[in-house]
Image (cartoon, rainbow, N blue to C red; front, side, top):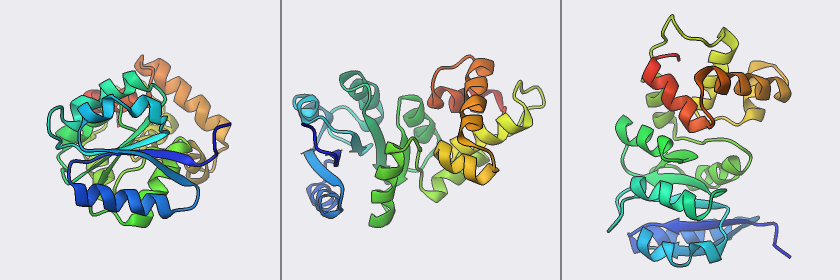
Length: 209
């Protein structure tokens, strides 16, 4: 029978950083580190057998970089939640990562407590980002008057773009979670997309939020 701990893998080429994160996560109640790797190529051989729920992924890696590894990892484990953990903060990398399937984007100056919280958050449907990254995402959007989205749908999509879970969006907009789900469904239909990442990408490209 599978244990109830959140199973975590790491791909980070710096051994000291990799071991530090592994220790940090393993000490947190409810978490279990099931694999650590220094490259995508080494991870690809064993990560399916590890059965992780969440992966912390560096961008700069030997061989295949983290951004290009994202779709390959999602193909290996479709339900895997991948959090980018990097020193890089350029908007191009952020949107490439989100477009390639990242569930969140954290910088390496993120506190240990927030990293643990982010892993929990992503398991609950959120898309955590460092505060600076979230601001960059929001600031990159300039709303178009030709947007097909209603005012409320736009508000929901803006919240999604900062990585908030459906539950948190419901709380902050003072609506119930079923209403949030309904808005998200309508957003997907209106933008002709099928995922959170694609909705954010389409909204950015068309300046809907």
